[in-house]
Amino acid sequence: MKYVLLICDDEVDAPTNEQLAADPGHTSWLQELTRRSDVQAMARLRPVVDATTVRVRDGQALVSDGPFAETKDFVGGVVLLECADLDEAIAIAAGHPYARRGCVEIRPVWE
Amino acid sequence: MSASEREVRAAVEAAYREEWGQVVATMIRLTGDWDLAEDCAQEAFTAALTAWPRDGVPRRPGAWLTTTARNRATDHVRRDAAGAVKLRALAALPPDPDDPDPEEIPDERLRLIFTCCHPALPFPARVALTLRTLAGLTTAEIARALLTAETTMGQRLSRAKRKIQEAGIPYRVPPAELLAHRLAAVLAVLYLIFNEGYGEQEQRRALTAEAIRLARVLVALMPAEPEPRGLLALMLLHESRRPTRVRDGVLVTLEQQDRTRWDRALIDEGVRVLDEALAMRHPGPYQVQAAIAACHATAPDAAATDWAQIAGLYATLARLAPSPVVELNRAVAVAMTDGIPAGLALVDAIASSGRLEGYHLLPATRADLLRRHGRPGEARASYEQALALAPSTAERRYLAERLRELAPED
Image 1: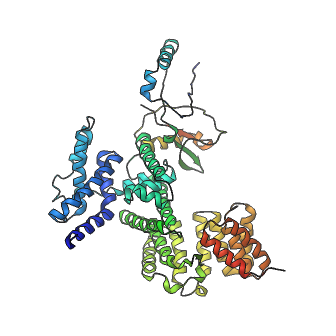
Image 2 (image 1 turned 180 degrees about the horizontal axis):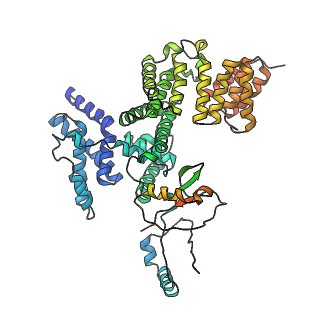
Image 3 (image 1 turned 180 degrees about the vertical axis):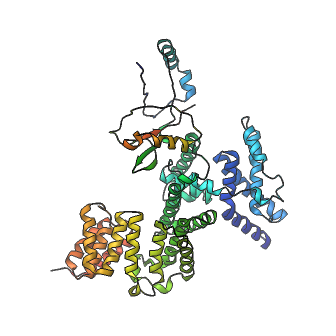
């Protein structure tokens, strides 16, 4: 079985990458993770203010700032990809069938 | 201050209005760093204040300022270990500030305006960023004009710049397949800036002038696109009437405005710019709105207004950019052409759809039509509804006056 872990918080006092790396709780979790499992991909996302949401309705790609607001939508899949810029990511996102039935949220990876 | 000092200061101020956006746009292109670009542009204008009185105003102020800003950026970037890539880009500009070839410094303002108005940025941030980076207003000026606290505005600007960097919003003019959509977003930002300044408050008036200036820049940068011309014409035609819109703090309707005080020069220019746009034979919502404004602006008096043409233009607009507000305006034109009952029927259809719930102009329009139709009792009730919803003092005063004029039914 393959699983995706969606790691969530309220961003009130989110630690920096450096703080996370220095946090023994986090580093020991990472060691445990790599010992027990074969990690396929892992990424930390930048805060929601950097999110962009794409919906396609009537053949038109609607781009808006911020995360998906409709609470009836749930995460149905994740893709980790590399592209030149946000416009390219938007074009790829707009092509996914879920952009027509729901939406695709684009979040830059925090590197 | 001597006469020549005053002249130089005026030259720096003029250069600031003319060149700020271009200097910032070029510096963003060269450094990829929005804060650094703004800082270096600011330093270049400060340097001009000492250099120009001493050396004279340069032949091409814009080229002098860009080269000076570039040199400042080089200094900043040298101190930064990771700056090698930026340094190479900065070196690509002509080195001699006195003899730069203007062909070698391309106008980057189109990239700047499209990036400022990218749909991944929150709308208020697009407005603020356009006013800061392209128009050169300070954070304090933008905050004052948009009735926002300066600290809030500062945060809005820095968050927007951070998002451009972190989310990877490209600094470019969008490719052909995205252009129509993205241009509409740019025009919406400019029109909002104009409308923010079109109210009653003196402190916000500068915004209409900025919006017109930015629309002129956009027209010059995209000469083959008709909609920027449509928007510029619309702004000029609205602006021509501004001094007559409010009298003694009371809103004056188009019908009652003193047409001798409308600015003929602005009307003539607006009509000319609109004609240029229409000649491109690719109509859009701004061109149609400008055509409607031109119908009003060129009517010698209210009675001579070509309402049939206006009704037709609103029908076109409703097709190009459907909205209940457009329907409401069409209802007024229909009332003036086909009779008040026909207009009222359209207004009632909008009201029963609930799409303009809470919008003061819905009951206000209904009230005016009822009053003209000799139904004072119903007009009164609608004026009262409108009065409770109207957002501005001038409009509330206008509605209160209409209410006073209507004798109570019993």
